Length: 219
Ligand SMILES: Nc1ncnc2c1ncn2[C@@H]1O[C@H](COP(=O)(O)OP(=O)(O)OP(=O)(O)O)[C@@H](O)[C@H]1O
Ligand SMILES: [Mg+2]
Image (cartoon, rainbow, N blue to C red; front, top):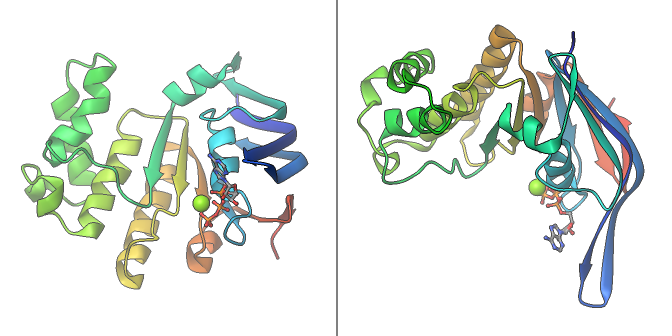
């Protein structure tokens, strides 16, 4: 049974003082597990907001988000619990070393073998010899590799990534992008990426363009 996230007829806006910023009206969009999807579009179009709504982090002003996990309907809380997140700024915990950052989400879920699973993922992303390094002792690319491993370590059904290569040089961005897509395909996890990077978007099964409140299949 395929996991799905279905956004139907979504409307969203922000009220900033007297001004209302209208982001989308009547936007519909479905993501399936095992599928990789990129969302591109101009700055301010609402890509990060759409990602937050799809991930169940933000509730839309109108419309519905229906999610199916393991054949049963799931609410936003259940979706978040089965999701991994990757951000432009890495967001590793500075006081924990690389393996500690990876083990934390597992420990929070009560896994007794958190450090063993974390060690396997650290090896998968090529950082076995950096286990005891804290984030400030890692390069940007290494920090993002840890963040990618942290997103996958709990065996999520969906990964949501917002500008995951935005802070990396071209070559490092390529290798982090390859790692994310390889991990998603190896684990059969759905991947939704928001990006300004054409080469990154081209790796996805589908690319959507968000502009002027509308989502269209990108050419
Ligand atoms: N919490 C908020 N309160 C008020 N306005 C907001 C809020 N979050 C976002 N906005 C506004 O909504 C619009 C869309 O923001 P969003 O971050 O989703 O855009 P984006 O497409 O991700 O842009 P970028 O490519 O620059 O990251 C912007 O004009 C932004 O200023
Ligand atoms: Mg954004």
